[in-house]
Length: 270
Image (cartoon, rainbow, N blue to C red; front, top):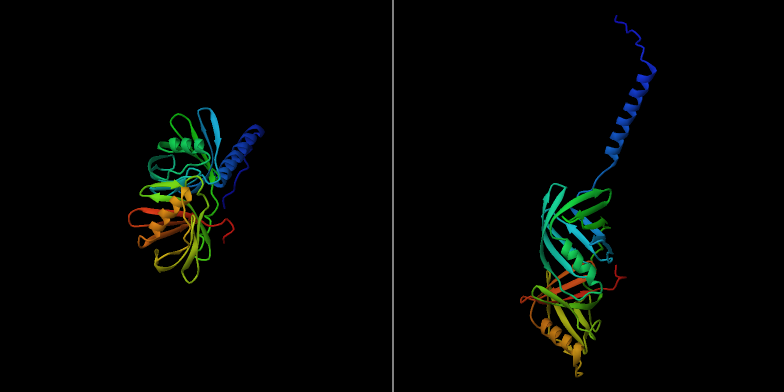
């Protein structure tokens, strides 16, 4: 049977070995605990740093990275882009379409759009992502909460926020904001106001396509911004099937010619 001889280790060497072992253990623990996020996913934008200034983001500013595409919101206007990742260290962004509404914080919107293009370095931290431009400007983000559940189409009062014309989206003219509203009931009857006159109609539904029947309206003479909105909505509802889409509290109705509307549900809708 083999026997093992006791080996004497000097005290100084023993201390060195003990510290080294402890250091290795900490490095492994830190490595195991530091789970860095995948850039693909939903991100809430917190701030921009550019030109020596920090601009704090509106609540709606966000990005959602897919494998090769991006959609998001500059704070008011929505946008799309394509994305080409170089692993998790960089992404090259090519801007696509965006809405063109007049917004309260256009300084932030303009700066965000200017920074979010071209090759951007990616700096990852727990639940955080920072995109860096070549000149050192940054877009700081944190993990976004789960998406807001989509509002139901029916039994909700939708308030028209903007009008679509092809690839452009414009907010309602001054003096017409909040004047156009409608509710689609469970039986697909619809009622509301076009901006000036009240109206009712019956809707037929085929998948995501809604077709409005003839409108019955009151007959007040309407002019100014509310009258302009009314004329455009009357034409839209009579144009045939409208493709509908709901994302969160936002409803989009779009005709075959590219014209349409964007309406919003109240914030307390579940």
